[in-house]
Length: 454
Ligand SMILES: [Zn+2]
Image (cartoon, rainbow, N blue to C red; front, side):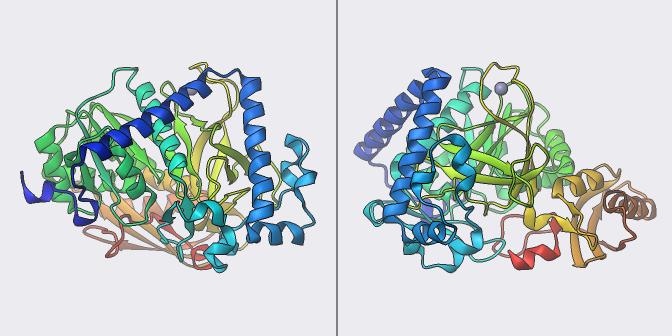
């Protein structure tokens, strides 16, 4: 085996059959629980969620100093939580609050000591630390496995390849340990490997299934396009942790023409939040494990695009209750799903608040709006939009080989103006390629002024 196919040192795992058996039995137990939840009637499931929420809130009140102080400051106490409608009486928790305090302030000391220390990437500021119990990770793995079976229509693909973040303390690192219960060690590769090596692994293994991040597969698709290559072995491509823009999606579909693209919505703070339906594009909320709300700028529930607020029902070590710090924008899908599964669905994850454009008139444009407009311009291979001032932008872009550069640049500026409806000044910077900054996995497609405050 080639050296580059070995996982990096931080992921090396000595084969230990007893450890493997123990991991498998944990996964089987978690699967049993998840399957039992699937069989529950909606009324029983709702009651179980309510009891989880009440238990979580009472426990946080009595054991987690941060919550007690936050809630007292807003005049809330657990006795005020009498029905689902009362959930809005719980103050929302912002990322900044969690960041600034000592991490023990937001932990339950009874369960935190045994729990895993996970951290957000810190790509938009210093990381948030979350202690996560093993049981919650196993539940997440079981849910992932169930979603995977749905995507495979009940016939799991055997030849799999994972490109994951091997950074110690990432939630993917924690989940990778659990993946070993079902996946061979050699099939877990680092998302930080050079793109040439990643693609060579795809050529060598010819996987049916790849699971990774949009930024990783997008880089690979761009590399493959430069090489005039496609990978037709891949039938299912699973993307997680980030959203993908329409241009990236088009390039990935071109590079993997036989693959179906499916996504799951996960975050270090809340675990698995939603997964894409096997039959449609919307995302089913993983409501046995999380409560999801969508609120407007004033914090009121909305059916329009709004901020995601999440409560993690499955982790008590670092309770996450009405957390608005994911800073993601999303919108509810209306009506029942064609697959027949009940429960709330997200129509789309519209991108991150810190990547949204705020203009002088107060208008806010989500990355989804901006990237959709730019992605529609023919002849564009890659781009990055930087907001230097409220009305001044720099658009770094790479042209496709055949593109008319002048026409491309004027179309890009027109596309940006069609979104902002303002006379923005956009300076186009022609680039040969746009790579992530050293140590980073992804190139943020939109970087705006708000990012400095995140
Ligand atoms: Zn569905």
